[in-house]
Structures are given as C-alpha cells and as structure tokens.
Length: 289
Ligand code: AMP
Ligand code: MN
Ligand code: MN
Ligand code: MN
Image 1 (cartoon, rainbow, N blue to C red):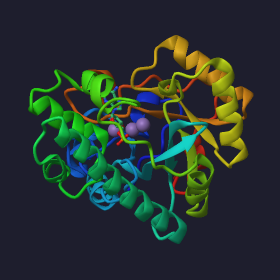
Image 2 (image 1 turned 180 degrees about the vertical axis):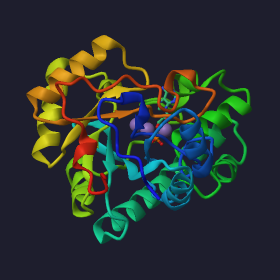
Image 3 (image 1 turned 60 degrees about the horizontal axis):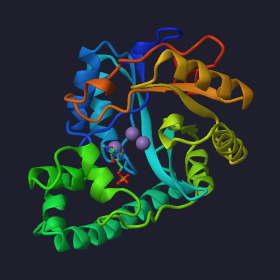
C-alpha cells in the first residue's frame, strides 16, 4: 500500500528522473527502487529513455517498500536543430498515442544503432551492433552503450571523451538525430493524461534568449513544468531556473538523472529542495494522496 504522500518542501525525498537497464542505466528497475529507498527517497519516478518497459517491475518493488511510485519516461525530441529531452510523468500506460510513439522511438533507436555500429566497425570495433545489443539486453540502445563499448575496447578513456571524440555531432561515429519534433512528443504525454516536463534545461548549453525561446515553445505545446533542481545544479543554477519557471508560468520538478551508482554527481535523491517560489509539479499528479 502506498501510504507516503508526496512530500511538500522535503526536496531530496523526491526524485522524478532516473534510469534503469530498460535504457542506459546500469541497475535493473528493482535495484533502482531499492537504491532510492536506501537513499531515503519517498516519491520516485523511473524515466528511461523512450521506454516504459521498466515501470511494472519498479512499481511492484516500490509498493513493497512503501515508496510512492510515479510512471515516467524521458522522450528524445528535436527543437531548433537540437536534441531536447522531455520527461513525461504520471501518465496512463494504456494510451494508444503514447504507446505508438514509443514503438516509433524504439524503431528509430534500432535503426540509428545499426548506423552508428556500422561507422564504429569501420573504426575497428568488431561486431559493434551485436555487442551493443547484448549489453542493452533488450532495453533501448543509447549512445551511452556505445561509449561503454569504446571504453572497453580501449579506444576511448572515458565516456566524456567517447562523446567528444567519436559519438558527438560531426564526429566519426555520429549519426544525425532521427527524433520527432518536441511538440508531438509533448502531445503523446498529454494524451496519456500526464505532465510534460522539460528535462535538465541547462544541459543544452543555450544562451539566455534561446532558452527563453525554448521555454516559450515548450509551454505553447502544452508543457507544464521544467526541472529546476537536477543532480548537478548549484545554488546559482537553481535560482536561475526558478526565475525562468516563474517567468514562463511553469511548475517545477526535481530529478537526479541517476544512471549508475559510480557517478557520484548524480545520485538518487541527492537533490536540493524546490525553491518556495516555484509550485511543485507533483501537486498536480493524479495519484497524489
Ligand atoms: P542518446 O539518447 O542515445 O543520444 O544517448 C544520450 C545519452 O548518452 C544521455 O542520456 C547520457 O546518458 C549519455 N551522454 C550524452 N552525452 C554525454 C557525455 N558528454 N558524456 C557522457 N555521457 C553522455
Ligand atoms: Mn542517459
Ligand atoms: Mn536527458
Ligand atoms: Mn535522463
């Protein structure tokens, strides 16, 4: 039974952005929930890249440990020539537009993975497609999986270098992003009764005016919230994001973007509380007690 009301003002007890082996996280969904529980998280959303495959296992584990669980997903989209990530929260799983959208994302990921693998094979990485598929184990294949292969093969020293030297835009292993525009992806989340949240607004490295334009377009397309506190935000970032949220009449979300316990800078629940000037997205959840 869920007895925990999403806490107001408890900040770090809420984490609405993390990954499991259903995409590029290193822990299976049940272990993500166990790790969140151990970290004192009371309200958790699992938000795998373009996949809801981990939600059943995560929800069952969360219920057993008394964690309030929220359905989540992180959609890969395009806006103004950039990859923009939209987190969907608290949606129904039986929505046809969302499920069809996710199936289309799955096909796009497979096709892109084949194309990236072909490029990496030319760089001397044998059997890249088979190996990345084996590593993903049926979950969505992301560039993070290719980065791990490149490190294993001794071609790159770490993930940052793998992206900078090979997997990033314009590099030898890059394949143009195939993602849909941001607006229809937001529509899938809305059709499923969920809230669309702009993920990690600072990760796009936009100028102030470009971020302003992105938030305007996001809001116009039906987006309701933005992440104000993320795993690596400092107090200046949080104050800046809170001002943007206020200016654009957006609710605030908090999410670590946890992928791997070895990455200490984005640990589950390791988040600052939402500033009081921003209304929390979780107060709108259908499942809030
Ligand atoms: P994809 O969605 O397949 O393009 O893969 C993007 C994923 O790769 C992100 O969700 C991160 O987990 C990871 N990633 C992206 N850029 C970097 C980077 N510079 N260093 C390490 N990991 C990255
Ligand atoms: Mn990722
Ligand atoms: Mn992301
Ligand atoms: Mn993420």
